[in-house]
Amino acid sequence: MGANNKRSVGPPALAKRASSGGSASKNQDVIRRLSWVIAAISVHLEELRYFWGKALGISGPQWMILMALAEIDQDDGVPVNVVSKKLHVDSSFVTTQSKLLEKKGFIRRKPSTEDARIVLMSLTDRTYKQLASLASQQEALNEFIFETFDDRELDELTDKLAVLQTRLEKACLKLVLDI
Image (cartoon, rainbow, N blue to C red):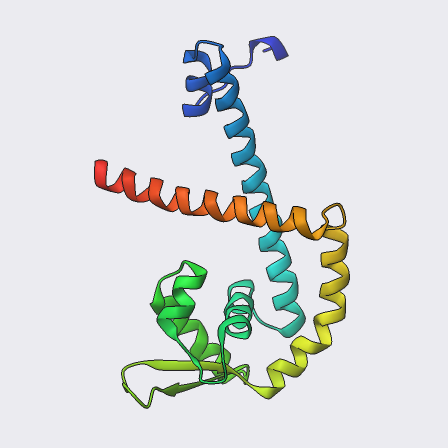
């Protein structure tokens, strides 16, 4: 089969062939391209998570739990359900992984004084030291990644992506409710 005889299959190809070729079609092409770019960014971010996790001897998802705790803990500990919401994962996953991280000495888990059913997690001093030892390497990498953006552009991009995230969450709910 020659290069000219290749056929695209699947919903995007079908939608592309079915479109009228006007500005709406161009918009759909841009949306598809954006979706692929975001998917590729997600893959690369996942690779970075696994790299940083490996540097500490843990998995990429465990690294993300540490990063969530580092960001949101105010010295009182963070409930499992708060971390699971931040990471968009089931709380049972965070519970299982946090127990493994506790065994390795990365986090502390303790029952809440207000409700013993709630487990509060926090980073250990050892973990803070290990994260600090990686900080300059992370900063250098971030400078490389984001060197083409000034602060204003980075803020605008982040704001637009946050809006897109919210719209995608609503779209998922809409699909579930409409089906």
